[in-house]
Image 1 (tube, rainbow, N blue to C red):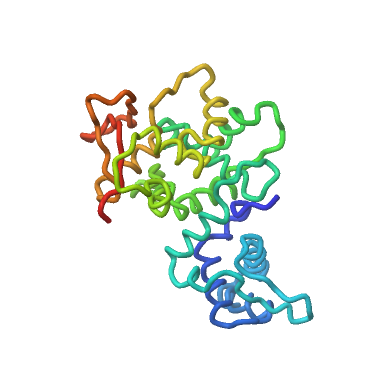
Image 2 (cartoon, rainbow, N blue to C red):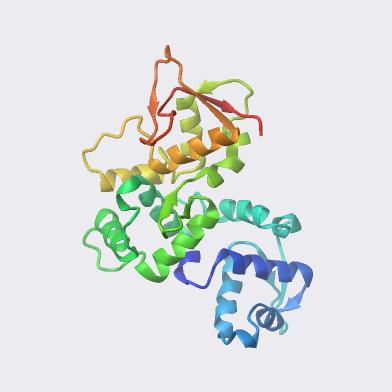
Length: 284
């Protein structure tokens, strides 16, 4: 099982730099590629760029020949590496949505789902505190750590920001906000021009993003960390923030109809939006 968060130096911008080099220099020998990514002036071991190379392979970005040259080539559409947004969308599809424990990137997905279920209560928790609570909730009594404070949770924070689950405030607090995760999926989640019940949207979202509210990973983590607590139609802080952001951007329109049979409550915030019954695509 492989995880992009098992090394602190395997970061999104470094993987993006590597695939750009490969795209610009087709069939570049592996040794030359590693030297270009990791110049001697940086005074770092080539092991660093070697680890990045392996992760790029495992994420389906590059392949290498089996001869002495071990030449690397791009195996994705070059559009993927034209800009960081295209690369982000590819990586979202490549490493998110994992629900099987023995699969690559499962811990990244599971920890993300668990983090979302915690809402505001752990926004100021240290990485060591997050590690302890995660294992107490999800792996009670298991001595082996599935994720540690470093490099695991430290690397997760970098990847979570890149993948669209939030951003770091000026006070180094991670602000939960999955608008960047959801925005590329809006044509799939809200394909109609008409208004739809918010519950219909939530069913689609849970199927597409198992780590978000209602998804299979989210539900497992909720049950483990909130035993005997009824959630009902309350939305997480992360999803609530994302919906408010997307609504403000005009990408979606949230509605609250008095005659609706089903109500959904956004996480409390200083906002005029707290109750929602329907949703539609906005004008982007």
